[in-house]
Length: 169
Image 1 (cartoon, rainbow, N blue to C red):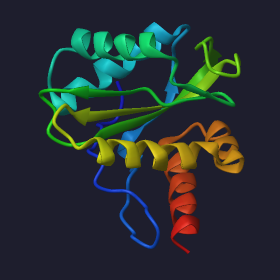
Image 2 (image 1 turned 180 degrees about the vertical axis):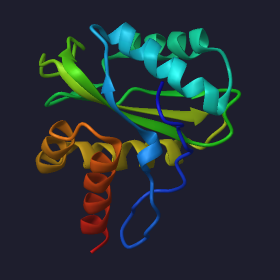
Image 3 (image 1 turned 90 degrees about the vertical axis):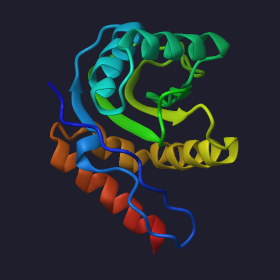
Image 4 (image 1 turned 90 degrees about the horizontal axis):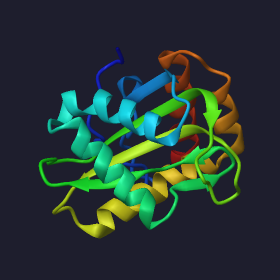
């Protein structure tokens, strides 16, 4: 169905160069017509990597959304959850074939989703630093436009690599 999802091995902070996203973390053509359907597909695609039950992942995502929308505006959402059976940070970048209603803060539909899954016992600071990093990536209009115009994992991976290199320079 989708390429495997690798763990997030690090992040770019200041001059530290550690690759966070690889091509295997990318779903270039998620076919969903609603937020719940997108979450279900993300849950099903990811549990093969970090284990667990897709329904529990879906429930955790939906519970998080009840607290407040993770749609940050400009067609981007960053749903994030903590799960007890996960031992490392995991993430997946999904480009939706068609934008979906997401209840984002700007009320615009979402077509880019970066889901972050962290261990329940992870330090909150680590989780927040990763969210900040993902937010910086997806607040870059040129990067988002390049992702939106790319339909292949390899091309999206090139966009992400270029962004990371520019951040490290």
